[in-house]
Amino acid sequence: MGAEHTVLAVDAGNSKTDVAVVAGDGSVLGTARGGGFRPPVVGVRQAVDTLADAVGRAFAAAGVTAVGHVSACLANADLPVEEERLAAALHARAWGTTVDVRNDTFAILRAGVEEPRGVAVVCGAGINCVGMRPDGRVARFPALGRISGDWGGGWGLSEEALWHAARAEDGRGAPTELARTVPAHFGLSTMYELIEALHLGRVEDVRRHELTPVLFATAADGDPVARALVDRLADEVVAMAVVALTRLDLLGEEVPVLLGGGVLAARHPQLDDRVRELLAERAPKAVPRVVTARPVLGAALLGLDHQGAPARAHARVREFYERV
Image (cartoon, rainbow, N blue to C red; front, side, top):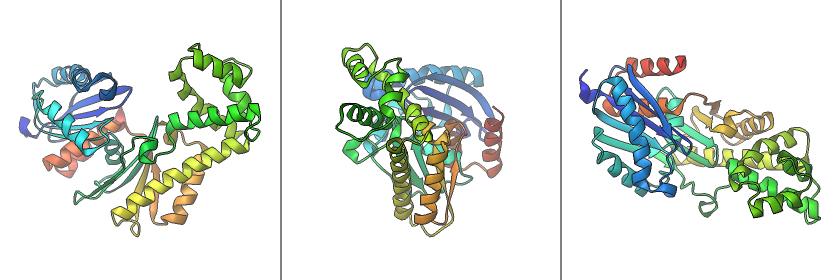
């Protein structure tokens, strides 16, 4: 197959970017890794410049200067209008003849299924859900935080842990071990000390995300407040999955529900068990499965789908990422 069948696969998250050049037969010709993709923070041009560095190194490894198709699954491409803007920015770089941009959640979904059919719920820093059918129909959510009705994700769980811990210490809320475990994570004795340290910048605000594992550990030790938060997350995960399945007319069919992202892939027993229990009640034919494959595999498979590549090409690229 010629260069017109080659795919540039891009999986760009908030913290890192993976790219791969894939031939039409599924052979991986070159790969590279780069920094995070954050257009809301640095602007579209600078964010695409970050991609360009990794793409240039992958092209050099593959011995190419362009490909037939660019399949890019990008963080912060939460709305169709954002996908269109980012697609235009990537097309202007002339990396490929055609360009397809999707939210990065689609990469996790496609990486976990043999055909483009199913639903994926991703819980990492935030929470999102997408679904797709082979006929091209999709289900998705804006996933913009509280303004779009979201609850959960690592950042949201950390905020909840802080909130409950603060109220437990000063008497406004129910007692919880979080009032001890949350400040202890930062080497402090009380929530008052932690509140002051966060407010005055002695503890960097970005470090709040470190509290998600603290919440799960506290829940595992039996704390009722922490356990209730984990159960609420399970309910949110299943609610999103059931809505997506319903929109795609898949609720009555045996279909995979993929669970991905750092929080779900960690397979915390309480969360994992509760998600499966609720799915069995609300979507009995759903087949839950945790996805641990690198999402760039999903971007590559979506690219091969677009190119009409044969099944053996899909199998070859999947085999490559199972080895690395």
